[in-house]
Length: 394
Ligand SMILES: [Zn+2]
Ligand SMILES: [Zn+2]
Image 1 (cartoon, rainbow, N blue to C red):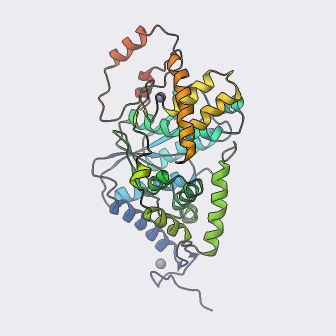
Image 2: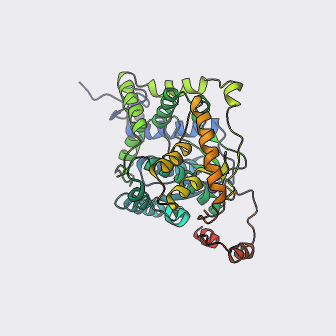
């Protein structure tokens, strides 16, 4: 039997079967359809405008490495006119993040993009290694998730970028849809399929790989011989997501379109006004200025628990519960009560560490002298990170 020719160009020999469609195609056609689908996702959602400064959340893993490569390729090919940056967060996980950051540093050279690395240690005064040694491996993903999200925003703010793109792929989004359904978190279900999110006065955040299959991202990285880091985090994985992931893989094996179908289902849900009304009004954290639906933002709340060190397991549990993503149901009432108790404790605590002030690009940064005055006039024993340090990192 002669070698099968590519289903798209009909010329070259087909060397791979596309996971998303089952088509047998050649390498060049695979690159082309993968890139073009991402380009279509970007243009249909009008994600960018010329002159935008865009930070690529770069972990050194396959998704963000392919994202950086494809963003650069498309920016050149279609003249998006974007100024691209790599933004990495160093969670302080020895043997995992230190190695993956070496990959990002090589990507910086390979893709010729400015790189900014921001660490949990400099922002929060805690590495994940230190957090795990204090709280153990249960719940540590909660800390890491909250801290990473804020760290990306703070890094973007320091870089004065308008937009952060992340490597979340179709599998990730389909898993999140399933998790929100299983938890009954309808309000979050309405948001999790959005390609671009932007809260009140915050930096835009979007997912150009929303419709890209994980298997195709791996294939793309493999055939392009991209340099990425492929070890799982050494701390406990998100167990609940693990179940959703295993279930999704089973569905995909039976019918590959299941991933896209689940995303489309998620998109088609309409969130009623009753559920929308249960969402809390956004305000700003009274301690660090980050957006928050409570007196303190989630990072400051978690940090408070860590700084108290001797906090009983129940207090830490309370902090973790209120900071984790709780669904719309009876629990939220309970959570509000717990948060009320917490706020009462937290309001009195003003000797706590202050995370460097969050600023959006639209907010004018006060002159450094103002910061210095604020720092020197502070009589409390606060551990304040010098904001100058933040801006010089850019
Ligand atoms: Zn072809
Ligand atoms: Zn805060």
